Length: 446
Ligand SMILES: CC(=O)Nc1cnc2ccccc2c1
Image (tube, rainbow, N blue to C red; front, side, top):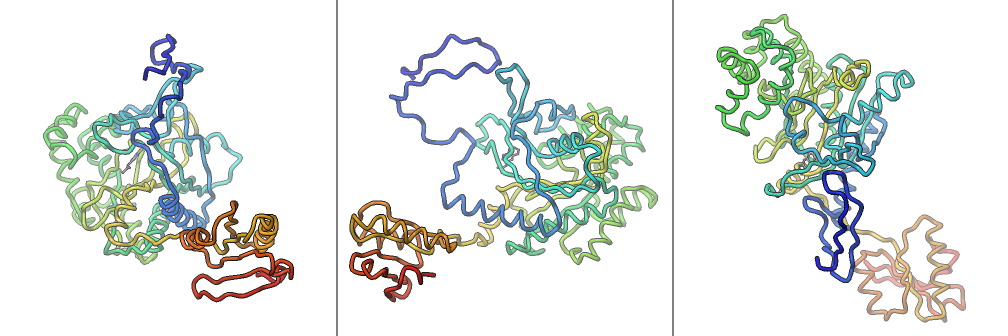
């Protein structure tokens, strides 16, 4: 804008020092493209969602962890052609470091596990709720940030860990009113893919890339999928065989295809039998086409979906036994999931399950004349020290205004501090729902 003195700072990608804004111009009061504010009513819903995430995590014995939203870009540079890489919110900071706003939480968790090294006893059961970022050309008008709930188990090689993680998500779904007829989980294992690729002697280092290509099935035309697979050194025969295996929806059919000896089948059989014991079999189905879009998964993968098929995946996760060594650490068996804050809210809206969350203040306290303002604040303090919430009227307002505010903030009681009563050490307490009015000694307020 005219008032903005553009400094002839250094050009290029190095982030330039802030420019001077002359605030005579009106600033844009909307948040940056693709981001959201959380005014009170939205913040109540977000807090309700996160409270449920937290309580389930606690119920499963997980400890909360957190990491910086800003990480070294190096954490996310994987060469498998992931979408998350194309959309990395990365830049060079003023110390010329390549940094990125985190697109996911798992790499930070892996970094912290390596940093903690031998000083932590396994298994680790950690959870985090954090804002994640992507930089998309706004042509797609999609959001550039969302919050993710992550739960990870580090140090357990068996599928008992995956079974426990799925159980925690089902517990969450049940808490917010969703049942197995609303949502389900598609389960597979990347070892299915691995066993097929080995049959056709596709080099191991193509594994991550092939997974990312397969994850695009249903999102881009099949011809492009085939072309991408050819560019990943796969023969046409191997491609057709792979696509055939990926269309399988029963473990019996998979066994016919791969034989009973592979790890893929034994992992899946064990997981489905554990599901039986947990009592959540009806929530799961085998679906060989599920690979998930992150290169580092190595075993079981799963995603939560809405059975009406209108929405994108609700959550997703899997085993990633090799991630730590890609950061130079010693490998540890690991599995986890990410659960975003967007699709779940769309689903709850669809199902009419959004909770009614109103501001609720117990008391509104106001003085009936100027010189009693101090008395009113003393009454507010007494109530607060008893653990009650108080909205103290801070200006000299007419009673009509006070009643209107009391209704808007949904106060249970109106406490009026008036001269005559105050002389007797009393206040006037009005229960707003019934209109009942009492004179009560200040020190008998509860
Ligand atoms: C539906 C939605 O908001 N998705 C979303 C929004 N922001 C992200 C940011 C980083 C990574 C994934 C993201 C995914």
